[in-house]
Image (cartoon, rainbow, N blue to C red; front, side, top):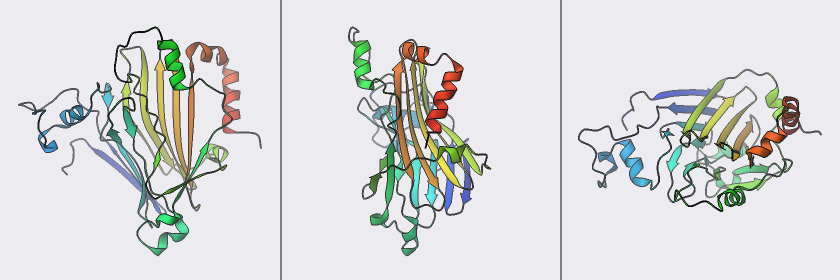
Length: 289
Protein backbone atom coordinates (compact mmCIF):
# COMPACT_ATOMS: atom_id res chain seq x y z
CA UNK A 1 0.00 0.00 0.00
CA UNK A 2 1.48 3.42 -0.91
CA UNK A 3 2.44 5.64 1.97
CA UNK A 4 -0.06 8.43 2.60
CA UNK A 5 1.42 11.93 2.28
CA UNK A 6 1.89 13.44 5.73
CA UNK A 7 1.56 10.11 7.56
CA UNK A 8 3.68 10.11 10.72
CA UNK A 9 4.88 6.92 12.39
CA UNK A 10 6.36 6.57 15.87
CA UNK A 11 7.58 3.37 17.48
CA UNK A 12 9.44 2.09 20.52
CA UNK A 13 10.46 -1.35 21.80
CA UNK A 14 10.52 -1.93 25.56
CA UNK A 15 11.51 -5.41 26.64
CA UNK A 16 9.13 -7.89 25.02
CA UNK A 17 6.75 -5.19 23.81
CA UNK A 18 6.72 -3.11 20.65
CA UNK A 19 4.61 0.07 20.50
CA UNK A 20 3.72 1.73 17.21
CA UNK A 21 1.42 4.60 16.27
CA UNK A 22 0.44 6.22 13.00
CA UNK A 23 -0.95 9.75 12.79
CA UNK A 24 -2.54 11.51 9.86
CA UNK A 25 -4.67 14.58 9.26
CA UNK A 26 -8.44 14.37 9.52
CA UNK A 27 -10.55 13.18 6.62
CA UNK A 28 -11.34 15.81 4.01
CA UNK A 29 -14.95 16.98 3.82
CA UNK A 30 -15.50 16.31 0.11
CA UNK A 31 -14.12 14.41 -2.84
CA UNK A 32 -10.80 15.93 -3.90
CA UNK A 33 -10.36 14.14 -7.21
CA UNK A 34 -10.84 15.70 -10.62
CA UNK A 35 -13.01 14.42 -12.14
CA UNK A 36 -14.91 13.32 -9.01
CA UNK A 37 -15.07 9.65 -8.05
CA UNK A 38 -17.83 7.46 -9.40
CA UNK A 39 -19.82 6.69 -6.23
CA UNK A 40 -21.32 3.58 -7.86
CA UNK A 41 -17.94 1.96 -8.41
CA UNK A 42 -17.55 -1.46 -6.77
CA UNK A 43 -13.76 -1.16 -6.77
CA UNK A 44 -12.50 0.64 -3.61
CA UNK A 45 -9.26 1.45 -5.43
CA UNK A 46 -11.26 3.70 -7.76
CA UNK A 47 -12.55 5.81 -4.84
CA UNK A 48 -10.81 8.40 -2.70
CA UNK A 49 -10.94 7.75 1.03
CA UNK A 50 -13.78 10.22 1.59
CA UNK A 51 -15.97 8.61 -1.08
CA UNK A 52 -15.14 5.08 0.11
CA UNK A 53 -16.16 5.88 3.69
CA UNK A 54 -19.22 7.93 2.69
CA UNK A 55 -20.47 5.10 0.48
CA UNK A 56 -20.46 2.66 3.41
CA UNK A 57 -22.09 4.99 5.96
CA UNK A 58 -25.80 5.85 5.89
CA UNK A 59 -25.60 8.82 8.26
CA UNK A 60 -23.61 12.09 8.26
CA UNK A 61 -19.96 11.75 9.22
CA UNK A 62 -18.60 13.54 12.30
CA UNK A 63 -17.06 16.92 11.55
CA UNK A 64 -13.60 15.56 12.36
CA UNK A 65 -12.75 12.00 11.45
CA UNK A 66 -9.27 10.45 11.65
CA UNK A 67 -9.51 7.08 9.87
CA UNK A 68 -5.73 6.65 9.56
CA UNK A 69 -4.83 7.14 13.22
CA UNK A 70 -3.83 3.80 14.72
CA UNK A 71 -2.19 2.33 17.81
CA UNK A 72 -0.62 -1.12 17.75
CA UNK A 73 1.01 -2.87 20.70
CA UNK A 74 2.74 -6.18 20.01
CA UNK A 75 4.01 -8.81 22.45
CA UNK A 76 7.10 -9.89 20.51
CA UNK A 77 7.61 -13.48 21.79
CA UNK A 78 4.08 -14.49 20.83
CA UNK A 79 3.29 -11.82 18.20
CA UNK A 80 0.02 -11.19 20.03
CA UNK A 81 -1.27 -7.66 19.57
CA UNK A 82 -3.52 -4.96 20.94
CA UNK A 83 -4.59 -2.57 18.20
CA UNK A 84 -6.76 0.53 18.08
CA UNK A 85 -8.20 1.86 14.84
CA UNK A 86 -11.37 3.34 13.44
CA UNK A 87 -13.65 1.14 11.44
CA UNK A 88 -17.01 2.24 10.12
CA UNK A 89 -20.06 0.37 11.29
CA UNK A 90 -23.56 0.60 9.95
CA UNK A 91 -26.38 0.48 11.02
CA UNK A 92 -27.37 2.93 13.75
CA UNK A 93 -26.85 3.40 16.66
CA UNK A 94 -23.30 2.18 17.17
CA UNK A 95 -21.94 4.87 14.84
CA UNK A 96 -18.19 4.51 15.12
CA UNK A 97 -16.45 1.73 16.94
CA UNK A 98 -12.85 1.46 17.96
CA UNK A 99 -11.65 -2.07 17.38
CA UNK A 100 -9.36 -3.64 19.94
CA UNK A 101 -7.92 -6.86 18.54
CA UNK A 102 -6.96 -8.37 21.88
CA UNK A 103 -4.75 -11.45 21.62
CA UNK A 104 -2.69 -11.49 24.79
CA UNK A 105 -1.07 -14.73 25.90
CA UNK A 106 0.15 -15.97 29.24
CA UNK A 107 3.82 -15.27 28.72
CA UNK A 108 5.00 -18.45 30.47
CA UNK A 109 3.80 -20.37 27.41
CA UNK A 110 4.85 -17.88 24.75
CA UNK A 111 8.23 -19.53 24.11
CA UNK A 112 6.63 -22.83 23.05
CA UNK A 113 5.49 -21.52 19.70
CA UNK A 114 5.58 -18.37 17.64
CA UNK A 115 1.81 -18.68 17.31
CA UNK A 116 -0.54 -17.64 20.07
CA UNK A 117 -1.32 -20.58 22.39
CA UNK A 118 -5.06 -19.97 22.43
CA UNK A 119 -5.81 -22.14 25.43
CA UNK A 120 -3.47 -20.03 27.54
CA UNK A 121 -4.78 -16.62 26.53
CA UNK A 122 -6.84 -14.53 28.88
CA UNK A 123 -8.06 -11.03 29.55
CA UNK A 124 -8.87 -10.03 33.10
CA UNK A 125 -12.02 -7.90 33.14
CA UNK A 126 -13.18 -5.75 36.01
CA UNK A 127 -16.00 -3.25 36.40
CA UNK A 128 -16.02 -0.54 39.04
CA UNK A 129 -18.93 -0.99 41.46
CA UNK A 130 -18.06 1.85 43.82
CA UNK A 131 -19.08 4.76 41.59
CA UNK A 132 -22.26 6.76 42.21
CA UNK A 133 -25.28 5.46 40.34
CA UNK A 134 -25.99 7.58 37.28
CA UNK A 135 -28.99 7.41 35.00
CA UNK A 136 -28.52 4.82 32.22
CA UNK A 137 -28.09 6.22 28.74
CA UNK A 138 -31.22 4.80 27.10
CA UNK A 139 -33.55 5.67 29.97
CA UNK A 140 -32.17 9.20 30.15
CA UNK A 141 -32.50 9.71 26.40
CA UNK A 142 -36.16 8.71 26.51
CA UNK A 143 -36.80 11.05 29.44
CA UNK A 144 -35.70 14.23 27.71
CA UNK A 145 -36.84 13.38 24.16
CA UNK A 146 -40.34 12.13 24.96
CA UNK A 147 -42.07 15.27 23.67
CA UNK A 148 -39.69 15.97 20.78
CA UNK A 149 -40.24 15.15 17.14
CA UNK A 150 -37.65 12.93 15.49
CA UNK A 151 -35.13 15.15 13.70
CA UNK A 152 -32.43 12.60 12.88
CA UNK A 153 -32.63 8.88 12.20
CA UNK A 154 -29.18 8.29 13.63
CA UNK A 155 -27.39 8.84 16.94
CA UNK A 156 -26.27 12.42 16.38
CA UNK A 157 -24.20 12.32 19.60
CA UNK A 158 -21.94 9.70 17.95
CA UNK A 159 -21.96 7.63 21.11
CA UNK A 160 -20.32 4.23 20.94
CA UNK A 161 -20.99 1.54 23.52
CA UNK A 162 -17.79 -0.25 22.62
CA UNK A 163 -15.69 -1.47 25.55
CA UNK A 164 -13.06 -3.48 23.75
CA UNK A 165 -13.48 -7.03 22.53
CA UNK A 166 -11.75 -10.33 23.10
CA UNK A 167 -10.97 -12.11 19.85
CA UNK A 168 -12.59 -15.51 19.14
CA UNK A 169 -10.82 -18.27 21.02
CA UNK A 170 -9.62 -15.99 23.81
CA UNK A 171 -10.87 -16.32 27.39
CA UNK A 172 -12.11 -13.27 29.33
CA UNK A 173 -11.99 -13.82 33.07
CA UNK A 174 -13.91 -11.59 35.52
CA UNK A 175 -11.52 -10.54 38.26
CA UNK A 176 -11.37 -8.58 41.47
CA UNK A 177 -7.92 -7.34 40.53
CA UNK A 178 -7.81 -3.61 39.91
CA UNK A 179 -5.50 -1.29 38.06
CA UNK A 180 -2.88 -0.03 40.48
CA UNK A 181 -3.59 3.69 40.30
CA UNK A 182 -1.33 4.41 43.24
CA UNK A 183 1.59 2.91 41.34
CA UNK A 184 0.62 4.90 38.25
CA UNK A 185 0.55 8.13 40.27
CA UNK A 186 4.17 7.73 41.38
CA UNK A 187 6.77 9.71 39.41
CA UNK A 188 8.29 7.45 36.78
CA UNK A 189 10.17 8.03 33.56
CA UNK A 190 7.96 7.97 30.47
CA UNK A 191 9.56 5.82 27.79
CA UNK A 192 6.86 6.19 25.15
CA UNK A 193 3.64 8.19 25.08
CA UNK A 194 1.13 9.08 22.39
CA UNK A 195 -2.35 10.56 22.04
CA UNK A 196 -4.56 9.91 19.01
CA UNK A 197 -7.87 11.50 18.10
CA UNK A 198 -10.39 9.28 16.33
CA UNK A 199 -13.38 11.57 15.78
CA UNK A 200 -15.00 14.75 17.07
CA UNK A 201 -18.16 16.78 16.46
CA UNK A 202 -19.57 19.92 18.12
CA UNK A 203 -23.28 19.38 17.25
CA UNK A 204 -23.48 22.76 15.54
CA UNK A 205 -21.95 24.58 18.55
CA UNK A 206 -24.38 22.85 20.91
CA UNK A 207 -21.89 20.62 22.70
CA UNK A 208 -19.15 18.18 21.85
CA UNK A 209 -18.43 14.52 21.20
CA UNK A 210 -14.84 13.31 21.10
CA UNK A 211 -13.28 9.87 21.01
CA UNK A 212 -9.57 9.59 21.65
CA UNK A 213 -6.98 7.10 22.83
CA UNK A 214 -3.93 7.79 24.94
CA UNK A 215 -1.17 5.48 26.02
CA UNK A 216 2.03 5.67 27.98
CA UNK A 217 4.74 3.14 28.71
CA UNK A 218 7.01 3.32 31.74
CA UNK A 219 9.79 1.00 32.93
CA UNK A 220 7.26 -0.88 35.09
CA UNK A 221 4.06 -0.98 33.02
CA UNK A 222 1.95 0.47 30.23
CA UNK A 223 -1.53 1.98 30.25
CA UNK A 224 -3.98 2.56 27.39
CA UNK A 225 -7.01 4.83 27.86
CA UNK A 226 -9.84 4.92 25.33
CA UNK A 227 -12.15 7.81 26.26
CA UNK A 228 -15.46 9.00 24.85
CA UNK A 229 -16.74 12.38 26.06
CA UNK A 230 -20.20 13.59 25.03
CA UNK A 231 -21.56 16.93 26.21
CA UNK A 232 -24.89 18.34 25.07
CA UNK A 233 -25.07 21.88 26.43
CA UNK A 234 -27.74 22.32 29.07
CA UNK A 235 -28.79 18.66 28.97
CA UNK A 236 -26.26 16.00 29.91
CA UNK A 237 -22.64 14.90 30.08
CA UNK A 238 -21.49 11.36 29.28
CA UNK A 239 -18.03 9.85 29.80
CA UNK A 240 -17.04 6.30 28.89
CA UNK A 241 -13.55 5.11 29.75
CA UNK A 242 -11.91 1.82 28.84
CA UNK A 243 -8.43 1.17 30.20
CA UNK A 244 -5.93 -1.58 29.45
CA UNK A 245 -3.12 -1.98 31.98
CA UNK A 246 -0.19 -4.37 31.99
CA UNK A 247 2.52 -4.63 34.59
CA UNK A 248 5.67 -5.91 32.90
CA UNK A 249 6.44 -9.40 34.11
CA UNK A 250 2.82 -10.29 34.83
CA UNK A 251 0.87 -12.81 32.75
CA UNK A 252 -2.14 -10.79 31.65
CA UNK A 253 -3.70 -7.42 30.98
CA UNK A 254 -6.45 -5.85 33.08
CA UNK A 255 -9.29 -4.18 31.21
CA UNK A 256 -11.45 -1.76 33.18
CA UNK A 257 -14.53 0.02 31.89
CA UNK A 258 -16.36 2.96 33.51
CA UNK A 259 -19.61 4.68 32.50
CA UNK A 260 -20.45 8.14 33.82
CA UNK A 261 -23.59 10.00 32.83
CA UNK A 262 -25.79 12.64 34.39
CA UNK A 263 -27.91 15.68 33.72
CA UNK A 264 -25.98 18.92 33.59
CA UNK A 265 -28.02 20.53 36.36
CA UNK A 266 -27.25 17.65 38.72
CA UNK A 267 -23.55 17.68 37.95
CA UNK A 268 -23.40 21.42 38.52
CA UNK A 269 -25.00 21.00 41.94
CA UNK A 270 -22.61 18.23 42.95
CA UNK A 271 -19.33 19.64 41.74
CA UNK A 272 -19.30 23.41 42.17
CA UNK A 273 -16.80 23.24 45.04
CA UNK A 274 -13.28 22.46 43.76
CA UNK A 275 -12.36 20.90 47.11
CA UNK A 276 -15.24 18.41 46.83
CA UNK A 277 -14.13 17.53 43.31
CA UNK A 278 -10.57 16.86 44.50
CA UNK A 279 -11.90 14.70 47.34
CA UNK A 280 -14.09 12.69 44.97
CA UNK A 281 -11.19 12.15 42.60
CA UNK A 282 -8.91 11.08 45.46
CA UNK A 283 -11.53 8.59 46.68
CA UNK A 284 -11.88 7.14 43.18
CA UNK A 285 -8.21 6.65 42.42
CA UNK A 286 -6.99 5.93 45.95
CA UNK A 287 -9.68 3.74 47.54
CA UNK A 288 -9.30 2.92 51.21
CA UNK A 289 -7.75 -0.47 51.83
